[in-house]
Every structure is written in C-alpha cells, then in structure tokens.
Image 1 (cartoon, one colour):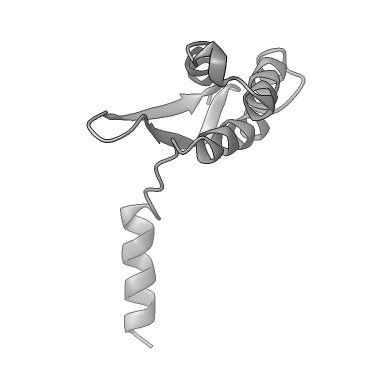
Image 2 (tube, rainbow, N blue to C red):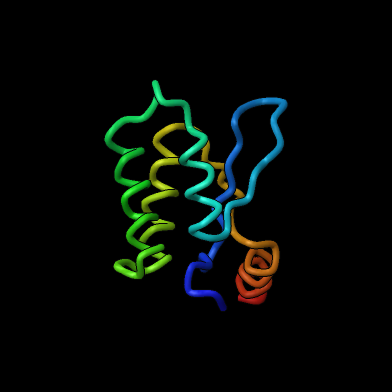
Length: 99
C-alpha cells in the first residue's frame, strides 16, 4: 500500500446532478483542494491543505490528512455518507438475526 493512500475513500458530491467523486489518496485530495474556488477558501480549507501538504512531506500520516480532508468535505456540505460497506451491513444483520 502506498504511504499516501487513504485507508477509506472520501466520497464527495458537488451537488444534485453532479457525479460522486471518490478521493482515495493524498495527491488526489491536494488536486481537489487546489481546484477549490479562491473565494471559498477559509480556515477549514487551509487546515485540510496544510495537512495534505504535511502528509506529502512525510510529516503527517495519510490517515491524519484524510481525516482533515473529510472534515473539510463535511463542513462544506460535499461529503457523501455511504453508510457501512455492504458486506459489513450484511454481517451486522446476520449477527443480529441469529440472536
């Protein structure tokens, strides 16, 4: 596994009618952040950008950068919550159905 790969994908949507984008590594998160409109860049944006830059420089883990990027996506309303993975959801239902 690449040291800049996220353990879990951050899923984003820019709004209705836009496709869901999946960001699964620090480099893709940096590209997304650099394309973010200048007028909408605030402290949460800067924090996510700084964390991703630190991960690229091996000063922070990719997972820490993912958490910061996911926080940015959540606060800006872009984060798509897909819920638990289908396999995990099925295991949860099966485990509780047998009780």
